[in-house]
Image 1 (spheres, rainbow, N blue to C red):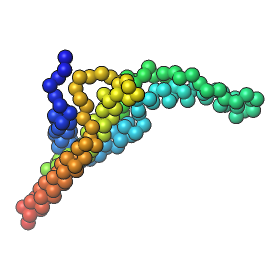
Image 2: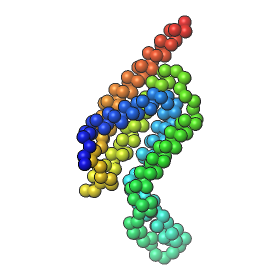
Image 3: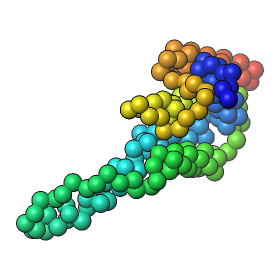
Image 4: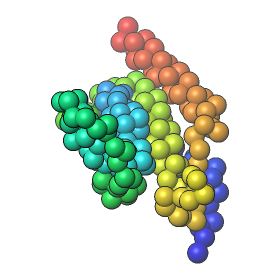
Amino acid sequence: MALPFTEQQCFFVAILAFIVIGFMRGWRRELVSLVFILLASFLVHQDTSNTVGNFITRLPSVIGYAAGASSTPQAAPNTTFLGGPFWSLMIFIAIVGLGYYVGNKAFPHPATPQERFVGIVPAVLGGAFILGYLSSYFRATGGQAALIVDVQSPDPMHYLSVIFFIAIVAVLVAFFAARRKSAAKK
């Protein structure tokens, strides 16, 4: 059963959702979330579980070699430490969720329209990184995809100009809202 969505439709619906979330949460909260999203997308990969597993299985032989053992460290067998790419995805979701939670607890709701419109910029950037991370799960790597879904996954790199345009429009709207508010006070 294939869903009737194209890659472009999936991308624009997801970015629209991030625009609404960024508008509701404001720039301070979204900036905290963006830091966690960047941290998660750079530290947690599909093969993170294999890397951690290999590191842990090689650690005793490396320590033994450093302590003066006569044999060289042996190559560890390829093991899956956390159960494959599913757990890497769960760790990614947990870090992103923690970012949204910390952002909500650290800062109050936005008070001005400028804060809301500027919140669109980090939300769109965070959304692009989340989509980029998730696209690696749907794209076949080495002839085999981590998850098989009938919907084409959007690649945010194809839409960099759209993301840039949305960010510019959000900053301009925030600028004009700030000027209008300051002109109304005079």
